[in-house]
Length: 265
Image (cartoon, one colour):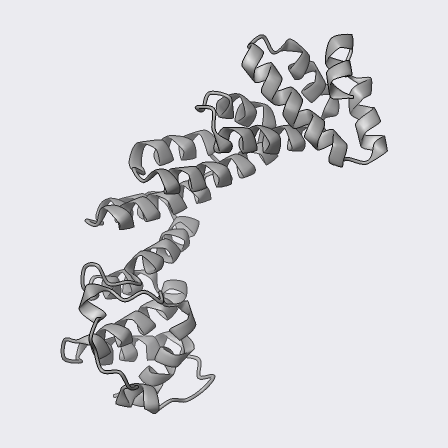
């Protein structure tokens, strides 16, 4: 059986990655370090075969705070090595445990990097609403590189918490703008007037002006909606102010509408 000292090394190595908050289950525990934490091997790294032994050792511990910390430590390393093991260890942690959401966040990204379908299936199995929201928001961002419209659909359908929806929207739009700034901009324009919409318009237009100033200028001149026109002009002025004189002049050369050009200068 693998030494408890190896498990102790996990606890110290991953202390910085754990939430600083305490869950109800972790309150009023022993103030001092546990025997496991006192027996450490600093800098020890663990190959997959040792992870399996650590998993068995941690799961065999009696219920309580020490077992939870051991399970958490092994889960953190398993996220990058064996996502199935990490998911199994996650279920060993009590509901409401402070680090569960953070583990879910990393695990969702890792699974989605390999298979979005597998990640969606796993996220759908989560019972805690916060964990589901976190998982789906992360998966949607991974999807954005190849299927940004589908990513937005997943985000808006599955994620309830507004903070996570806003965070996901910003990250998806940033990626979408790199592949299709026009489509991204036109979608962002449909959002309610708020900071996410304003920031998204600026991000998309900035990328578009950089990649294809002529197309960006032509699109701005064709905008019919008065509010959208006002918002894009404001964004463009901010972008051009921060641009080099050469880039600013290049963009303005493509603006034939004298009224629009005057607003941008």
